[in-house]
Image 1: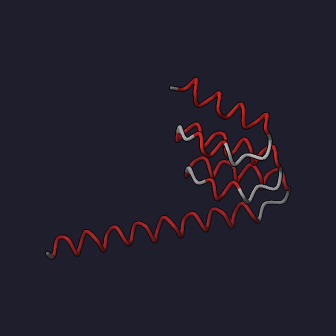
Image 2: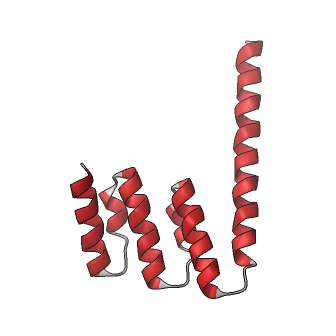
Image 3: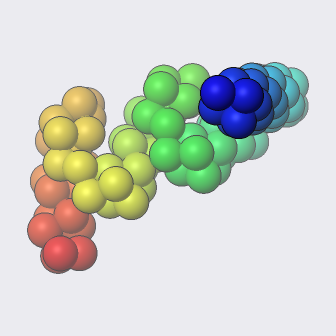
Length: 101
C-alpha cells in the first residue's frame, strides 16, 4: 500500500515537472526576436514532444504543416495528416507514413 502511494506521488511529481519544463520552453520560444525563429522553435519543441497542440503556436502555414507532418510520421498516425491546411502537404504526409511502414 505504501509503495503504491509512493509510486503515485513520484509519477505526479514527474508529470508536473515535465509540464512546467514544457511551459518554460514555450515561453522561451515566444520571446525570440524574429517570427521565423519563433516558428522554428515551436516546431522543434512540438516534434521533440510529439505534441501537435504546440504546432498551433506556429504562425506560418508551411512550417505548421511541416510540424504536423513530422509528428504524424513519428507517431505513424495518418489522422494527424487530415488536420493539415494544405492539400499538397497532406498528400505528402500520407505518402511519408505509407512509405515508412
